[in-house]
Image 1 (cartoon, rainbow, N blue to C red):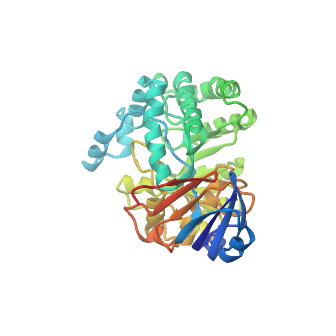
Image 2: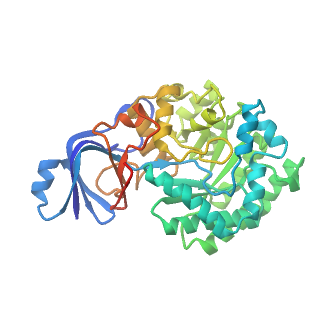
Length: 420
């Protein structure tokens, strides 16, 4: 056993996911200690009390610094090859994301590079990003496929996720996203590709997973619900078929236009609806009445140089669950830092530091169905936590452009950051 003691603030997030105004309740314990046994948290309480109670435990002095749960990033496109720096320059010259995509760039450009990459190349490039995210405090990350849009490459991406999970220390949660774009093979035939996904892509993915994943739960299925990609009819068809096959579901919604994707997510019982920039008040109300988590990705409009962000305060006022994610991807927001996402959310989503941390821990754990295991510092949970380089957790949002995580603790193992 080990005791992390002399903690200025233990921001526990105990008690489960928070919706609405309860997001501001961080569960702070001052002058605290955390007792860890193996991979699990055993006890949390006053530092003096736990030290006296467990005199033989290994002692780790937090140096009067703050401790928070490990960050959970519930929406990334971690697995890809190549980059799209040329498109960044094109956007600076006035081309829009959808214009670039229509001209064969965007997702389709990364698709070409990812199809060509070997599994080893794909793992090597993705591992570099995974380790950088881990150093910035992300202990669990969702990762999507979607840069293959054929069976072979989508399976290669799923295999890369399994390999990365085995390598560690970052824990990677898989999502199948064959519905990320319309491949060139089906250009102009969205209905045909939707039918192929329903009849071939999804069933074959389930079969592959059952044969290769060693009994792990089925991955999530996600759909890019957007005008010119998969609109409401196609999205519903894919998600309903996914549910029939036993997949948990998510969807990208309202990034560029309000098509009603958030309401569809609530109707179908989706685990989350993500992006939500153009979401209407009617859709927000539906989310607020549901268990579907609203996942905001403020790095994406920032990366695109846009000024409109998720109406986070409206979601909170409607009583919804709000989570944050990086949307790490090569086209719009190549950023591995959840610390930066918290800083953005306070400035552009108007969250408080407590709400931003809630959205990066316990609520984001709910957005990947892991809130019973991770996302808070309380007995019985996995020992995923961060010892900060500051005595006040609010500096995670107040300061930016630097790394304030001194030590990452993953499943009870300490990983010091040498450069902090």
